[in-house]
Length: 304
Image (cartoon, rainbow, N blue to C red; front, top):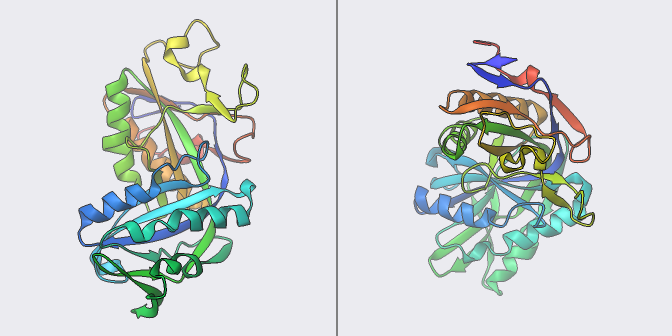
């Protein structure tokens, strides 16, 4: 099928069920909030780390618990790792939070079909070394920890919901088209979609991988060779003849409905980017995610 002049393969996006904690980080300025949220999400690729980090978007000061500039972020991992493993990874990651100057942290109130509560303060409050105290910010119960830039407030309990992820493979005439589509188009509009986040990769997209290895059997992931343009002619390629670059665009959402929205706005953004010629989704025969969303059902109906 075609949309806005580009080819959309009639296939499925495989989605993985996730444990997701949505958080709101506030700071002295919007720039500081984004910088520190990006740091907190760092080393957040599940193939190499115990937890994934994703930037959800800016939160206006009028909508944050303490009235300061904020950034919403998500920390998540596949439900296959188990809830206790995820909770440990979440607490380990957030234990670095008191290092972040001027910052405070609040539960983002994500809505999802299943919900657990993690007692964040029981671990992180020990940073206070006895000088911490219970407090309130509005209606929220927080721990107040004195740090070098003043008092830091961390909400005592964080909700965990069942979310999902998804991914697109985007074909470009060249590297510039792929990077422009990921950085300047898709990542920006996805961050405006409610309940959807973009993985914290610097350009919004990555060079993707496949599950396991063909030659190196012991690896969790290896190159997805059908999508590598330089291997055209050596493997059964999925790269069209007029394509010299492919970028993978992963998304995270707090619900399947939100994922559909995220895929739709991402496809529309890429389709409006000069040099993008096609979009598909990788298939791992259920090895990556057991849930399937048909691209046909998420491609905008207008201008098909």
